Length: 161
Image 1: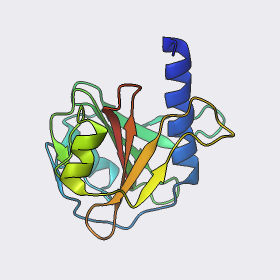
Image 2: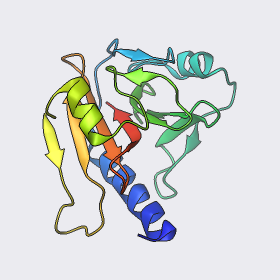
Image 3: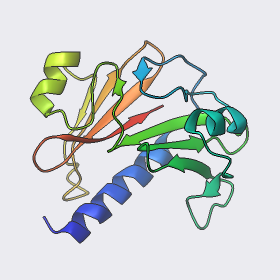
Image 4: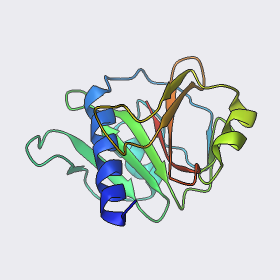
């Protein structure tokens, strides 16, 4: 798969995930490596990510949808437009922590060995060719973690909502 197609596919998968996601309740998710959590305010997220940067729009036509990122930590947080509370957390390399004992870079087999069979297995929907598979797990009984794999079946992104 070309790098451009892979980037486009990942961007589409992310946008699809964000658009379909609803607000999540505040929760203490089993995440190590960061103190940011679902339900955090902008100020709490800034403190957890060690930044004073203001959240920025991530969809040009929907400026009320804001995110805050710490690229050096591999963490992005997305704020619910009406409450301005964190409702999605995205983890990418170089995130060195774990989500429910799973880490970026694990293989699909390692993930299943660690967390068991997924609650949801979304494999290349036929209407979206080249879409990477997603595994969904209920990590703490309240929050859903979605694991995105690359072509070598390694976890490249983890979304928590």
